[in-house]
Length: 165
Picture 1 (cartoon, rainbow, N blue to C red):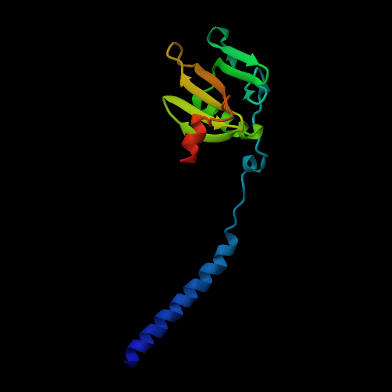
Picture 2: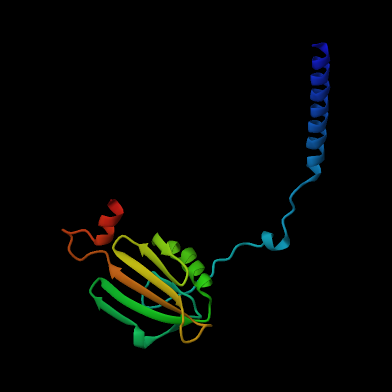
């Protein structure tokens, strides 16, 4: 029995020595950030075009043939169609960073061949469709759809019904 106690005490002593030495040597292991990690994060901003609360990157080119707007009193709705040389991933990142800055709440994101982003605001919805051009592989097509939440105050919109389930 004494033999086992001596072995356990000896093993425990080695474990304590290893633990103390390990903790002391870890003081020299400090993380030093790289220079590029110290630079402030910048959020690319765009300009406001036909919709006063949706930023559009300056590189986007409006396709007037595929775009249309409807405006009456307090309602502005429609679709703006753009092309850009930015890859789809960068376009998605732009909207993910900038839409919340204009008080849009993200609802869903479908990604890959055709990416679809859905946003909601108090009185309207925004659907952004991003896909690579079939005609030109270096181009990305972007459609921004904006619709009112609902015209009739007695009925809730379909989106609100779906969100409350």
